Length: 84
Image (cartoon, rainbow, N blue to C red):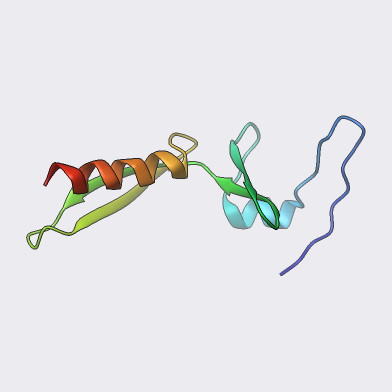
């Protein structure tokens, strides 16, 4: 799905209401802007808890929005892996 949005003079963009509702974004919600070779990516921020199952594989549980970035989640997975 592709939606075209405009950038205003202050650099703001408006995410259409239907997309905000689909993603569960509310007023004041946080998005992380990730630079990619193709452009930019907007991602919801969320809390992730890393545990290990009986076989030693990491399990990631995503909890609340607006708490931890995806980069922090990946770091937590790597830290758990390195402890074992």
